[in-house]
Image (cartoon, rainbow, N blue to C red; front, side, top):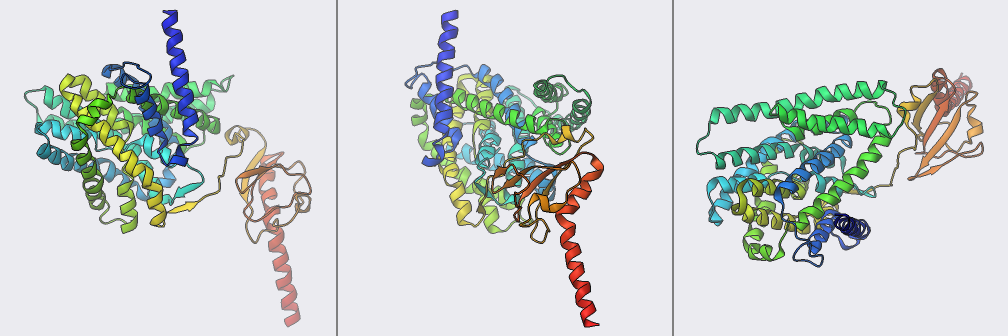
Length: 504
């Protein structure tokens, strides 16, 4: 047993090390980072160099649910309500009606070209309907080049919220395949209650977590991620027990706590960003281990046809219908259509089908895996290039957060504020000592062009600087802010008075 454990740890550590190191050069070769992880899994598999035989769909599905919960939650806490409220209705349409349309369009097409039943065809359509949260979130993690905000926020919301609908459809269709008869009324009721229960559980537990997190005052800061983790999986399990949508509950939980002030938020963001990456590496490597390249070659012609149909017809038709009367223009709709990346989620759903249906679902799993590879190689590689060609990509300066836990300091007697130095402010080109700041006021950091400056009394401010100031008491904070602004106003008023006197 000890020898097995040592071998397992050795193999796992080598795979993890390779994944991390190769991720550094993924952008140089133009490959999406998650495909690097998947290829490492394939190379480590039974038909690869590693020779690791792994074909346990039940275990894969169970572990994948845990990883998806972590990935979806991480995406939720990176999405604030204020960023999506303008396109919230459109996002909901895409994540519900859009999934249904894609399922139907792809299902009918698959039924015509493959020798499989209609329900199995719709099952394949439902598996491929959702855009993948892990793939989309990873594309938008590049801080040096960003897609314009409305498009990015809509895509992040869609990818985080359409997994629940796709998962619901997959489970319903699997139930219909297993059952000789079905009740349309019961399915309709489930269709309505499933998201409602998920929303309700996510909302209630988010409120409970925010209250508990802010008053519990744990002795060790390292326990706060554990507290969050317990609520995260409570969301999924309670929603599932009540026959609601666990993924939706997790996503709503993440969005709601990201939009409120909670203790140690910065620390929690960093922790779960790392956990999300670890989950993605483990998930994609494990899914890569499941693949038999020889089987992929056999279904390559059918898989390529389905992939191209999904990318070039089904997804664009769905997007242009769902966004028909929106403010998005043709270029933006084209980009959103092309950004329907497929990744771990369809493969996880396919592993569920393989677990439920046995060997007859292997062709579905292989087709899904092939479609994901094609999607990543075509859409993932060209997505930023297309955004640039359409004028939707801009170069951004990396803007890290201040290394300060604002929520903790706000509970003290001190005042703390982040301000931006604007063009007409008195502080522009003035030294710290020139501002006549209140006694005890400190300028802790200046964030300038993506880097931090720790100032002294002679440091000059520039337009666009983001400045973090702390005062002895909360009552002094507005006075300190005025020192950056008001002198300019006073000087302008003085010259205006002088000018008027001369006229008179």
